[in-house]
Image 1 (cartoon, rainbow, N blue to C red):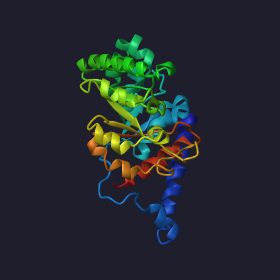
Image 2 (image 1 turned 45 degrees about the vertical axis):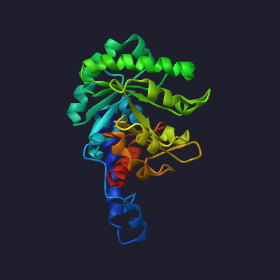
Image 3 (image 1 turned 30 degrees about the horizontal axis):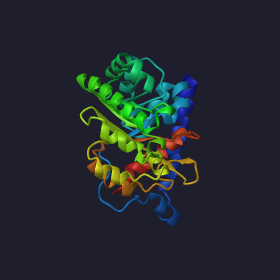
Length: 290
């Protein structure tokens, strides 16, 4: 494990060195383009708002939890979404505390909500997160009646979480934006969950691939999106580091305050170079103006 940690930190240091070397070329047109802040506004993401969803680094996290979290903190991340981290809740809490990373959400499965909820609430309380997030529904629930049932299940789970000072969010993929029997499935969840107990973690990448308008979702459902999965893609079916694909993040983020966004969590579903993804995505979000 010590060797793995050293390798992670060596990779992180090599990336940082390359970034520093590039900054020394500021007199050239190429470096000037790379250093330009994306977007044309004057607002940026608030301090402490940029996080990493740990699914993005799941393989190196499994090999070396402490070294991976240290690397993320070294890049500049201040918070994390907990997922793909099969460790005891107290250990996750302690590792996050040791590395100065604030855990803000815990992803759970549908089976947890309907059959293991007391245990998951206890885990979430131990870790110290603000929200538990349903990752997805089973495939056979993506019908009108299935979403209505899901809305009731989420509301019931959220009411129990609220008694403990936490909340419940729903995380989307692209399937929620299907039109079934003339209804957009995601709209059913928005309208039939109780806003006192259920809000949403909008996955921008999946929503964009489905053709959904994130700005309109924020406008039409104010304050219901406290957490984002900031995810990019290349327009041809592959994921990309944040800011290197086709999603117009500054345009979407202009409406973030309307949506109630508090945390911007980077996620990339594949992981060809997770620490590179972590650094590239952080630097983009740290610079972005809207």
